[in-house]
Length: 117
Image (tube, rainbow, N blue to C red; front, side, top):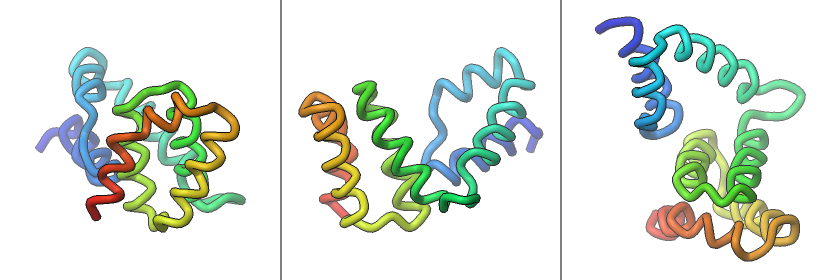
């Protein structure tokens, strides 16, 4: 397995899937994947805030941007990092109060995934 493939695999394990855009960016610029992984690992690891909380914050941000595929990715990551249904639903409340119904609607596939668990 190449280093490029190892990076994509480790990212896929962390997120629950490998976003196609990362595969494409890695094909175009392998160094990009190294930079992305270092940045992602540093920022979304436990620190003053636990990783789970940071990922729930990321879920709120991508929902506010109404990026449906991003909400699914962040939901998978949140669950993988131990977020509970209750924590996710409180995050949905924050999303609603700060970004409105369109942002919550952007989470429909992510919420369906949670419901189907």
